[in-house]
Image 1 (cartoon, one colour):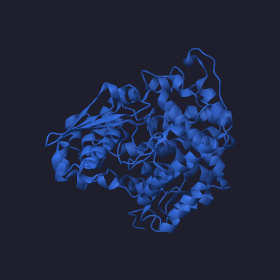
Image 2 (cartoon, helix red, strand yellow; image 1 turned 45 degrees about the vertical axis):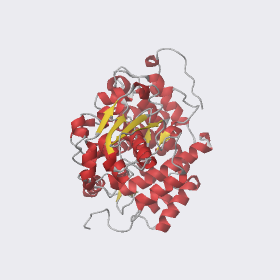
Image 3 (cartoon, rainbow, N blue to C red; image 1 turned 90 degrees about the horizontal axis):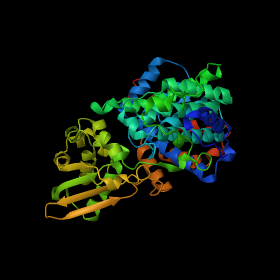
Image 4 (cartoon, helix red, strand yellow; image 1 turned 120 degrees about the vertical axis):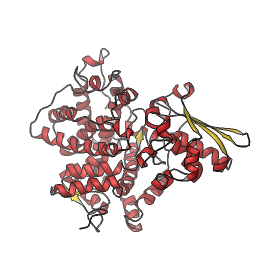
Length: 479
């Protein structure tokens, strides 16, 4: 499947057309066994965060919006009894799955693939009644597109301009997924990608007040991708150089675009294999330092009152998200603020010895020990941490104690990275912890077992019917 390109100016090449040609041709038979296993692994993780995210306030608001639209459909809103038209089911599932900050992430592109790709693939798959093999192939294509575009747009530069790459790159991925599922021709898929380019949006302004708009981003990207594919199928046209063109995505959304990264290793390896999972319910840039804090407090049995100061080595690309401005990050006002506050992450790790979903709560924002510890945390950028970024998301944590000890932990690969992965058993445990009270125990086990045999289903709907509940349409619904 290797797509070979001649050398020369990458902006002078037919990047979008080559991209579409490759993914249009991609078939289930082209996927190695390890890629198939990775899809299942990531799917189980996604279903856990989507089902639990459906209970979050932002997830419930999205479901209420979908219900009030009264657009009839048979597509599943995961973990609820609500059914909706495909694009709105995708929207609700995208919002829900990004509402916990426990979704997957790819380091080099600095974005969250699964919360765009899976909502689109499930909704489009139910709309089309496609086979699970088609679903799986579309998922792989979606991960490829979002990650490669994320690397090509230069994520740190993209962030500096105020864009959220999960959203902006995500709409192209969602479009590729829907195009594969709906069986678009190559020309239609090219037009669909062009249409998607006019829907690439997502502002980082949520950092100013902890708004829910970040959670909105993958849902809207999924919704927009389905619309782009459906429009193209009717004959609606889009620009055919939307990636590399003078007015295309890469040049418009970054001052330092790198189109070579879009094609690097295409056909030799699949980007989905580089995707990480999150053990902590917060921004990925906080996870390496949290690992370091947990390492120190557990290894040396450090009590909160013994801590004199904690210095967190933060990657410069993440400072805007989790460390700056320091005064604001040391005084988070809501759960979203806490999920993007490195001082809170460090403090909660010391006090609670973990940083899972329950730790990021309003109650803990006002916990006296947590509030006191946040004052003792500082964030620094260190040249030695930057040398191998973005391939490695390193951190160095230094903790000084009241009795004069200086303790240090160096994190090379945070927990959840492919080099330091969560095992299948750990993912299953995470899934069960998230869906407790949503799916009964026997159904949890059935979902896990069926995911392991996912490719055997001739119709995806035979699997998605397991993901519904029979209670109220959604949490908090009075009907």
